[in-house]
Length: 312
Ligand SMILES: C[S@@+](CC[C@H](N)C(=O)[O-])C[C@H]1O[C@@H](n2cnc3c(N)ncnc32)[C@H](O)[C@@H]1O
Image (cartoon, rainbow, N blue to C red; front, side, top):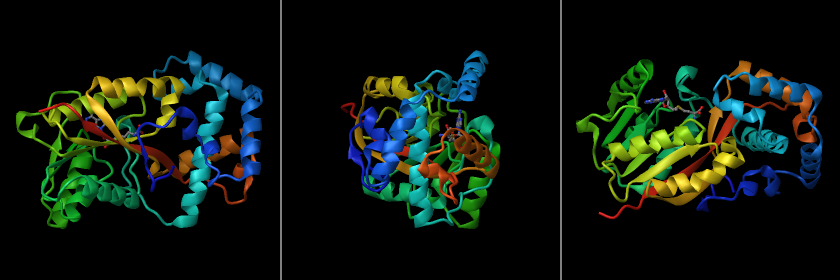
């Protein structure tokens, strides 16, 4: 299971871990990770998780305070193993933009990722079909318009991203439509249209996914047949969230298409990468992490295609 070959339908929790994929990990590496999963975490980690659980911060990462240790081991090794593949493939990948506003959970993807999404758009609809991008720090609207899609709309809460989208579109002579809007509010009437495909990159929580999908349904006027390309890191939902995902999707009247593991690559800012590498070297001294040039340059998330199955 990787960014190229998709699975049809939701994978089971165990297959999200790189441990289930012997194409990306050697037998010895798998064995070492299994041993680490079974070990009691270091005292410092236990204290840090306790403090995090008491912090009452309400941040999405707080869920890592109480989840099973083995899930954290899996998640980090999955990222590390997939980074190793990416860095061999193309170490010079760049983010579509240097701007990043964490207040809106932004982390721009690589240009190659944005272009891979365009290929999916080509597979799912015709160039003249209306396409919507809900939240567009990844500049997918620009790449779609550049690739010949003639009816593309980007909706975004952040003024600066809207300005960037408009400037790039103008500079390239594209017909991209850009609207500043907070999707927690209902869409303007003129933006409710029969979109064939909607791109979404929600926060990695069930609440985030539900908020973005409900808004996408409103924008499409609940049109039967609309496709949704949802970027999501499934392991970040943890077992609990992941087990509730099928129910959420079904309750919205949507069906599953392909699921692509590790489809999206987001360059990790240097400062964050340094802290992650520090944490990993201190607490996860597995072979995979110990190689001289080991770094986590990219955060990799999955993608799933959903379809509105409501009958006309
Ligand atoms: C939600 S962020 C990506 C989140 C990412 N997957 C994560 O959890 O780190 C994707 C885009 O949605 C935009 N966005 C966030 N909240 C929004 C809202 N309420 N309305 C419209 N766009 C929003 C962001 O500015 C960004 O460009």
